[in-house]
Image 1 (cartoon, rainbow, N blue to C red):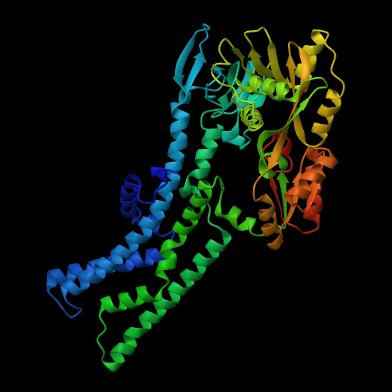
Image 2 (spheres, rainbow, N blue to C red):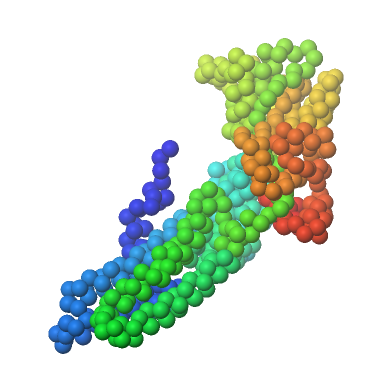
Length: 526
């Protein structure tokens, strides 16, 4: 895999920016935040004054000019290195924020003016209350509410769920988030977020490494190191009287060198950089932490609640089996399924084609001559093809295909409804296929458990963390997935209040609980 240049530790742009910041951070008002390095900077300044004095007076009782210049250079480089380490960690966090900021500013928006005309503007120009239009292939320019139309939206950039969702005007599924992508149809969106308060703005604020909070352990360690520094100041100060008593001549440079060597300079210099770099490394693994305190708290968790879809399972539903209706040849049904999925760009549609290919059914350019593709829309909830021989093949949600068949007075074949129900009860998703409005069978989709998830839960168990899966599935399906994934417990047919009640019970028993979820119904538990 090609490595992104911006992720490189030695990216020239980041290095130049960090080098400049190393000098600007010499400002005592900034250095005082790190008592140890502030002390080193103070003695470095003292060495500079001593060098000036030697250069002006020519007095070599404190050592030669060259000797003192070497000591001064080493001290200055020590301070600059500490500043550079922190600056480069901060610069990487800012580079991530700049990337998000660029996305926010460069996303084009089709703003609808008061006269009804559409004009292309930058998303950064949109204000609360503005209207903009999105069609298939467009990126949603800003957070808002759909006021007209409905569409299939890819929200994977926001939620991590790869399966598209339907958003439509009215009801509780009308909100859209800036940065998501419209996959079908057309929508008219009203901007609801004020400038600086959108999802991307919040993301930018989170990834700015320089704004992080120090952890309790980091604060305690800083206080401890500051205490050690004070002790060694006293130790070095008492050496002067002893040296005078025995007649030894110890130069100022020697005192300063001893002091800097005694105090924990390296720890103090790298403490902030370690914290920032750790948060940046977590960010590259798609883990965003609001503060170092959150990271430390994660180490004390006793119970972890996890949403099923997209967390325990991969989120991409895959075709696992074809169920032809009675009287339909299996090979012919598989061909219908493959043809109906040619125009379906979703992971589910691609998996149907892959499963059909594995069973020996392929589509080649010759067979597709004269075929009209019917793409999926949020309104019809189905996709398919119109063949040259006037066959109309459709594949979609069970209720949509059942409705199409009923409108043409075609009965549902025996066993199809039972197959749909069985697939649903087993945690799968049934897609019904019809030809010329006659139902021909069902495609079974299953949400596959992530590879290695069982081993991860076993590691958490050894760490003393209890894992609990929460899902809206029925108890039988939930039990099956929980056993296969290896979680310690599960909550089936979970409502928001059920998740909240479980968390409260665990907290009342003195346990620290963490919750992983991405839906509105997870909000109370989160």
